[in-house]
Structures are given as structure tokens and as C-alpha cells.
Image (cartoon, rainbow, N blue to C red; front, side, top):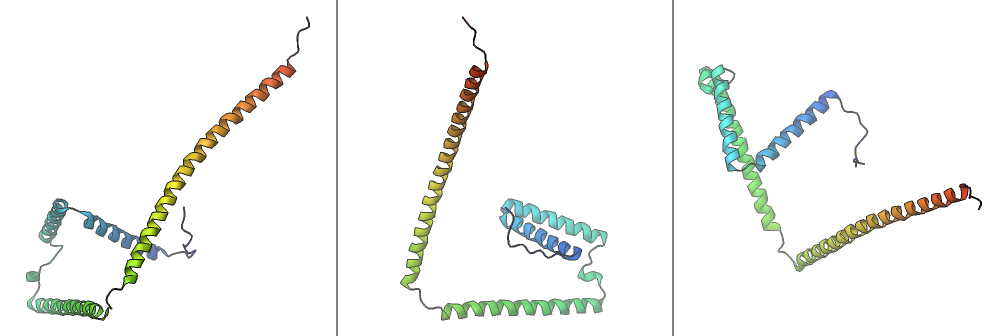
Length: 170
């Protein structure tokens, strides 16, 4: 069934390509998240091999391939990024700590919510079972209806034939 919420706006080709790339990245990320240890190790070894081949072909330059001045610039960028990453991690930890400290203790209403959710799930399960039963019943009755409809048609055809066929006079 198509989504009703889709907008009628036409996307440009560039926007379509960008969305496709994002979806592809997302699907790859999901696939990697589902991998077990053996598959993950196999994937890592393939990545290492691909990186080694690119490095041998000269497509990837390592830090030693740059001039001393370029090395300093690159390392400066690395330091700034590392500092920014550490700062973000620190902020997220502080935010979590702040939320934990300022969250009131759980009240009995949460257990009421859980009970309510359980009731909702139970009712939904009962309705789903009843729905399935009624669907099966409908199919049975429709097949019976079709059978009796065909019987009626055949009997009416037989009666019509008997009426139209002339009787022999004795």
C-alpha cells in the first residue's frame, strides 16, 4: 500500500543522487551491524587488503610521503579534530550525568503504564486472533456460497432445457 504522507514535490537529480547515497550508506551500516564476529573479521581483512593495494598503487599517500611542512599541517589538523572529539565526548558524558541527577525517582505510575501496555498488547492479540478466525470463516462461507450458486445455476439450466425440449407424443 503506498504511503499517503509522501509529498508531491519533484526532486532534482542531484537531490535524488544524494538521497540514494545516504540510503546506500545506511543499508551498509545496518548490514555491518548485523554481522557476526567471523564475518566482521573477514570484512576487516578485505578492507586491510584493499587499503594495502591502494597504498602500493600510490592512490593513498601516508604521512611519510608528504614534505615536513605538509606533515606539520596534517598533524595540526589531526590534533584539532582529536581535541574536538574529546570535547564532544566530555559534553555528552556531562549531559548524561546532568539528566541522571535531575531525573526524579520513578513513581508507581510507571508500573501502571506497564500494566496498561500489557492490557493493550493482550487486547490486540485477542483481536488479531479473532480477526484471523473471522477471515477463515468468511473464506469458508464464500466457497459454500459459490458452490450453492453454481448448483442453482445448473438446476435452472436443467429446468430450462426440459421446458425447451419438445415432449414426444405417445
